[in-house]
Length: 128
Image 1 (cartoon, rainbow, N blue to C red):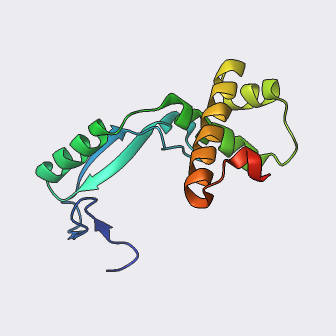
Image 2 (image 1 turned 90 degrees about the horizontal axis):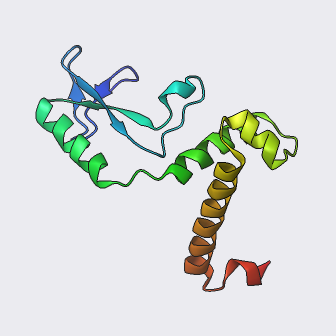
């Protein structure tokens, strides 16, 4: 395998140049730094139409969670802006509404609390 190789997202085999099959699937965890218009879509590569179908079926089973996408948009803005931002400024910078930003932050905080409880056996709020 070389740095320029393209491989199948299903079987991980290197695909001969020009033989790849590409597609896009909905994915709320996909957020892009340079092309914001692609947020929420993941681009996949397969070695055959059959493997592209496998990928589409996998992503069809994964729920699209708006809050997950919004958290990604917020993270992108925070990565570039190290100053504290009020929620209204964060909404403006992400293209979201204030209620969407609030829901995204609540969703992320709930996920963190679940993770913390699983890792430490202690509710996150009690350990701080």
